[in-house]
Image 1: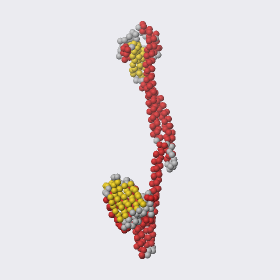
Image 2: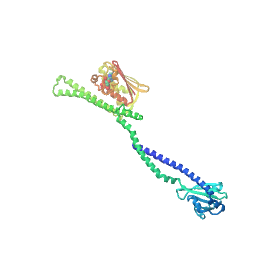
Image 3: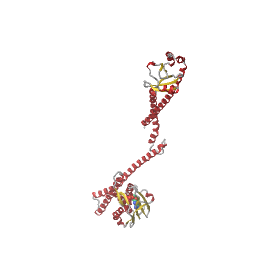
Image 4: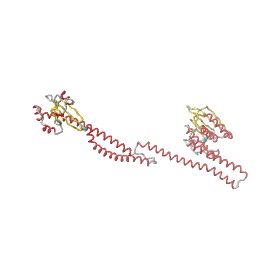
Length: 445
Ligand code: ADP
C-alpha cells in the first residue's frame, strides 16, 4: 500500500511538474518571440533616424561600417537591399558573396506591402533568425535581423532546473507518502486490534461495512468452532452410554455372574445397545457426508409422489406393530434431486411420525404442487411438540424427551439430517405442531 501511494503521488507530481514546466516554457517563449519581433521593428525605425544611416541614404555613399557595428552592438545584422534584390550593404558579410535577396519572404513582403517579417532556423540547430524588412522611400529595403534561441534549446537549457525541481518534489512526495500511509493505516490496524470488541467504532465511517463484515465472519468462525466442539462432545457422550452398557453386560458374562434365566434378556440388551451404536454411527457418518458440500451429488429428475410411496412401504413394518396407519395422497410432482438423500429425508420424517405417535394413530403423507413448487407434507396424530421446542428440534442431538427418543431408537440427529438434505436441495422446511394433537412437517422445493 505504502509503495502504491508513493508511486501514485510521485507520478502525479511528475506529471504536474512536466506539464507546468512545458506550459511555462511555451507561454514565455511565445512572449519572448513577440518581444524579439517588436524590438526588431523598433530597431529598424530607430536605425533610420540615425546619422550614419541618413548620411549614406542621402548621399548614396557606403555605410560607415564601424559606426554601424557600434550601433548594432554585434547582435543586430543590418542589410540594405536594392529594389531588384541586389544587396547593397551588409554589416555581417561581404556583399560580393551574397546572392540576390528577392527570394527572401520578408523582402518580397516589404516590396509589396511596405514591410515584412519572417523567421528561419539558422545553420546552427539551436538558433532561429528573426528578420524584419522595411521599404524606404526610394524603393530600397532596409532589413534588420537577430538570432534567438529556439524553443528546443530553451527547453534543453531549462532541463537541469526542471530535473532538480522534480527530484526535490519526488523526495517530498516519498516523505509525505510515508507519513500519509501511516496516518491512513492507523485506524485500520486499530480496527483489526479491536475485532472482538463489538462497541468499537472504526475511525473511518467508510470502514464500517468492512468492519461489520469481518466481525460477523469472525463470529461465524467462532460459532462454527464452538458448534464443532459441542458436536464432538455430544458424539462422545452419546457413544459412551451404549458402549458402557455393552461392556457391563460382557463383564457379567465373563465373570459367570449370570443366572441362566436372564441370559436371553442380557443378550437382548447387548443387541439393543449395539443397534443403538450402529444407528448413531450411521447418522454421524451421514451428517459428516452431508457437511462436505463439495461431494458430488447425483441429481436426477424424480417423482416425489413415487418416492414417497416407496418410503411408505418401507416403513409399514415399523408402524404395524403399534396399529398406526400410513396413507399417501396427492399428485405426481417432478423434482431434480438426489434420490438416496430424498428417500433418507422422507424416511426420517416418517420414522418420527410413527415413533412419536399414539398407538393406533395415523400418518398422512401428502404430495402437492403449490405455486409451481413441489411440496411434501408428513402429518401425524401423535404427541406433538410444544412451541418452545419447535425451533430447536432441528439442532443436532436436540430431543424433547430424551428417554422416549432413546427407547424408540432415536439418535437426536434425524431432523438435523432432514434439514441438511432440504438445504442441499434449496428446499424450505416448516413445522406446525400442537401438543397432544399431532405434528406436520412440510418440505417445499
Ligand atoms: P430423534 O432421533 O430423537 O427422533 P430427531 O432429530 O429426529 O431425533 O428429532 C428431534 C426431536 O424432535 C425428537 O427427539 C422429538 O422429541 C421431536 N420430534 C421429532 N419429530 C416429532 C414428531 N413427529 N412428533 C413429536 N415430536 C417429534
